[in-house]
Image (cartoon, rainbow, N blue to C red; front, side, top):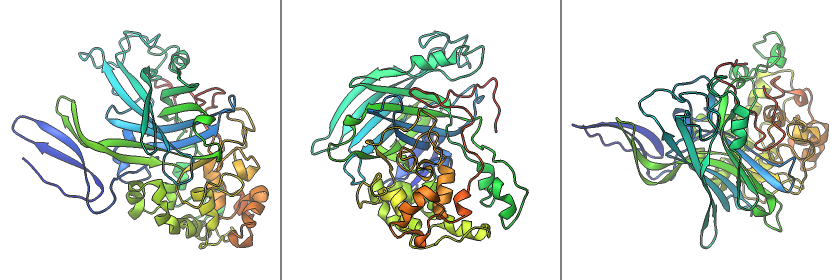
Length: 488
């Protein structure tokens, strides 16, 4: 049977059956619409929610607390990863091109890209087991399903320059349990690799560092501490971390700042992506045949943007475009739906302006003047001023970042401890607080009042991650163990 399917900028699943074979093809068809289709983060857009291996959940970028002459970039993939999800545990995709991208001249286009490609090896295909005994080293023969990867640096310019930084780098095994991985932390430490030029890299399973009350937020924008003030009131409660107890797959790289920034511009913009070849055929024996150019299927910069700023009908279109083209979505920032919901659902709030929100354009699309401004090009990037030193050891910065007076925190970069949910809830409500409020007001934003109350107290009640972060690279906490873990 042969079926011809036409689509415009949409990721399709096509089942093709013939006399001697059954194949599942992941096909990307181009039309007159955007040149690629993509989606991103914790199941926040329709297309990528069906492809978790390529789903970029979060991006972090910060000046390394214990090595302030370097920048650490962390990109997480595979949302809500169940630690006990065997025997075919989650892993990086061998057919996915993962990339961390840096814009250092303010045009919204990546100037430096770090590409990661993975390869899976199965030592014994005649067993269903991930491991056949305790895994005590990265070369242990009892580790049956293992992954290695390569890292390549690509520079944009008149003539694109590409350099292989490392090959056959080892990921750690998954944190399965006290029998399978009795000394997991030592195995993970072995998987931190040094690359030329003072670069460190890690790729493997970690605890999901994002923290947010997903259950309440998606119940008609509920915030448990503010439950009594919702138009459908409930008793006030402490927040519940909906991501607690789940893992993710982390790619982390630490690079000397001078290799990322230009001499005249200390602020860089960062985003991450995942790409697949245009067509992939999966045969019934599990082997894959991929053809055609790489097509981006996920991109992510600032947290929660595609989730709550971009509406359903534009989510895949947003991801189909490059950050440099984000000006087409500016009205979603200047007339934000989140602000309208906050005003309507919580009568206790001092209503924030629902139009003319240039403050959100500055915070999320151009950078804030005197802090991390990169120019007039509007692009969804995590903007990090590399000249601002760390203000605290890893994991110990003020969780409210700029709103708490900590210039080294979000929206200047994004640290693991930054409570981006509370920060953005307050920003959308013009509740920037006593420190950031006057800065926002000085630009004429928020109708002259950027410290509205009780808007400046908004929050989901989840103020920190369910596990403490580590003090050294890669900083993301060890993954939850499959044998013993709980959610929330």
